[in-house]
Amino acid sequence: LSGISAQVRNVQWSPTNDVATEFKKDDGLISGNSQKATLTIFAAKLLALYKAGTTSVKFECKATVGISSPTEVTAAQTVSIYSPSVAITPSSVNVFAMEDHVITCTLSSIPAQVNKVQWS
Image (cartoon, rainbow, N blue to C red; front, side, top):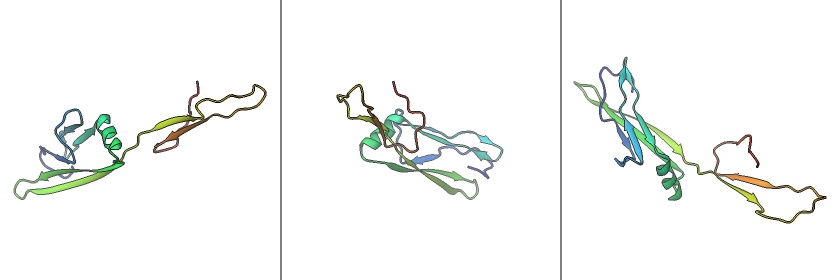
């Protein structure tokens, strides 16, 4: 929030609830003429949304600013939810000691290229 002259309280976030293990909301503190409110979406909630088939969620913050002429201001952000997984194929195989053998590690549902995959 910017261009404000006083602390804004009760910033509203949607879609959220008041379950402490799913979301953490913080109105923040005014500094100069701006204030940074935050919403933390806990990993367990993101995983539950992903398992339910949700791959993106649009979150919106809304606040009422102004004293003599209160005005609602809103902002939104869409988050994409990824739940990475990995598989080695085939999981087991017989190989000859005198021939090269290739093992493939497939990473799925990743938002960007992974560098430095570690083998052990």
